[in-house]
Image (cartoon, rainbow, N blue to C red; front, side):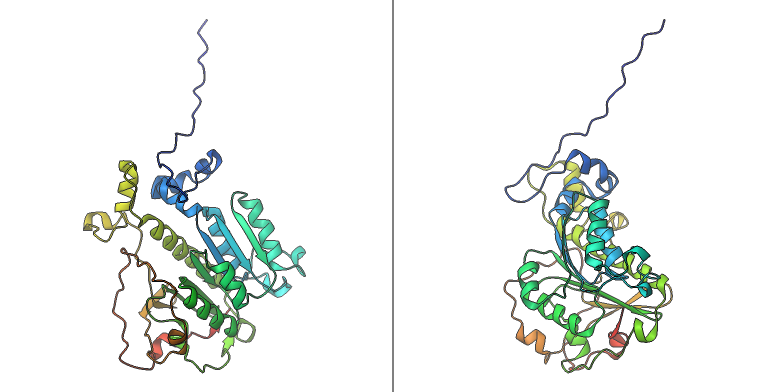
Length: 339
């Protein structure tokens, strides 16, 4: 009779990243398994720092809802959600996380329940209101990124002003008909008001008046999530590894350093389109540099509270042109087309 072999129990390996006071939250055994494929690619320290991030999202429609789901699934530690709209039947073709039984309910409540069910480790704060300047100042201060998925011009300008005041990076996108735009502002150059002007009129069109391609909405939402997570990971991984870190952690940090060799560039995270406007052209975004206007009221009025840390691995493709007072017309062709 053959002896029975004792099954080998595969255990989670011990954490190799030592805690620095107040810096990195530990990953639980469940989290380590859940994010194991991401950890294999980005490193454990990057996942720990992603867990430490707080992100604020305004607008939970066709862009904001799937974006929030992607961030929660990836392990962002805390999401702060704002939307004062209720689910309507006309939303369901493009806002695919909501169902007919959700009609009449606040989007923030429906989405918060879904996110908590999808990833219980993520902290969710949901507000069924449009954020005021006071709320943004209070809740935005500890955030790593502000995401603008709003559907009205007033909110977009408010978010731009407050992100400038807080020196909080702002990632925004909008879609109407078959047009889309996307931009990521790091607050070292132009702001959104530099593009649309100080005396811009109300929005020229949105999905209520122009209609919208629902598939394009989904594509842009995933592009938003990709840029947001790339930004959060790069800001996390750009921090130097502690002296006690392992060779693997040091290598993961080196991949996003400013001195990448050509042989390693294919393995690194893609360069982020900082301070550029992405316009949708059929199959993807084409980016053009945004221009900073010396006369912009927002840039003049909002004095930064502290200098913004620059990402060493994301150099601008082109220098800002501040020699002219009017922005490039090609850059603003769809700046008011909102979803």
